Image (cartoon, rainbow, N blue to C red; front, side, top):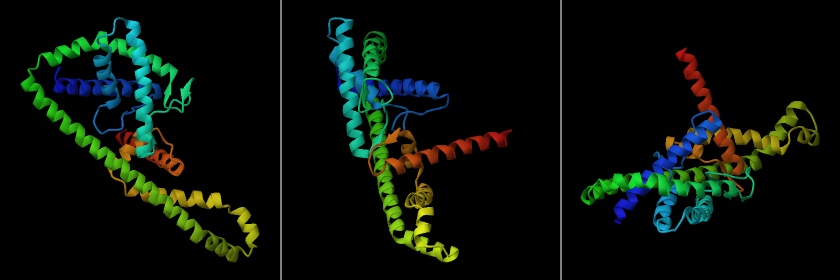
Length: 275
């Protein structure tokens, strides 16, 4: 078995995983939900899982052994991937916190059982047809195809990683700007208001809390930050489910909500203009 064949399987299964994930999430939310953290239509974790299923489970004696291996293997793969991407980018692309028997929202028993069943479907139902596709291509054709796919996939990974790093830098910069403005302007804001209203400083501080002032500055800085983001950074923001970083959690999720709300309003506006 040649590496180029395995890589082509990886890409094809990643595309099938993206199709499944997108359809499932779109039906669940009743709106289009383009899943995956990368730009292209593929979810690499499905490709890795399917290829490991084929390579590891191909020699197992029965369905039960395949099911158990895929169930445990998917749990390890999901947990490791979730942990690594969260540590690298402070973002979360799936969260099972609302499902029973989950571990830190990274894995849960119902999904692991589902992936165990999916391993059987892939190995015995899908992969025979996938093998026919690659077997029909001579190796001298597979190699350039694999190289082309590798170039596209590597470029996508590099662009996405760059966008996620830039997004975290923007979040850090925005938070620093908010904290700086609060420390410099809050007392000045209170003093100015005191002079205008001729009220005592203590009374005004009760009326205008630090939380209210911080929320106001956060929304202003959020709008400024969003105006500097390019399409790929915005797409990376939308693709995440949430942020778990203690510093970025609040701002990142507010930023995502703002992007989705703007997108929804823009979509409604286009529909209205067409009518």
